[in-house]
Image 1 (cartoon, rainbow, N blue to C red):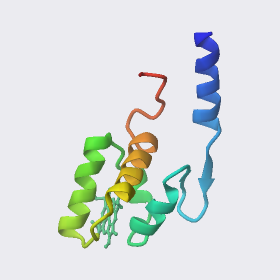
Image 2 (image 1 turned 30 degrees about the vertical axis):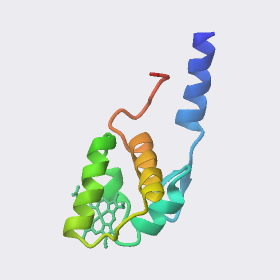
Image 3 (image 1 turned 120 degrees about the horizontal axis):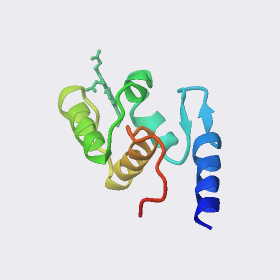
Length: 99
Ligand code: HEC
C-alpha cells in the first residue's frame, strides 16, 4: 500500500506538472499570484535559481518589499505565494508523504 502511494506521488509530483511557458515555472495552484506579484518585475530565473523552504521564502518576500518595491500583499495572497514557492521551489524537490 505504501509503495503504491509512493508511486502515485512520484508520478503526479515529478512527472505530472506542466510548465507555464510564459514564465518557465511549474504550472500549479498559485502560479497566477506569482505572475501578478513576482514575475511582473523580473524573470523567473531568480526564483528557479534560489530555492528554499517556507521561512526562506518569507524572508525573500519581505526583502522584496523592503528593498525593491514589492507592494503589500493581502494575507491570503501571501499564503498562496508561500505555499507555491515552498512546495515547488524548495531545495528538497521531491517531497514524499512526510506528514
Ligand atoms: C517591484 C519589483 C519586484 C517585485 C514585485 C518582486 N521583485 Fe524580486 N527582485 C526585484 C529586484 C529589483 C531584484 C534584484 C535584481 C538584481 O539583483 O539585479 C529582485 C531579486 C529577486 C531574487 C533574487 C535575489 C535574492 O535576493 O535572492 C529573488 C529570489 C526574488 N527577487 C524573488 C521574488 C519573489 C518571490 C517575488 C514575489 C513575491 C518578487 N521577487 C517580486 C524586484 C522585484
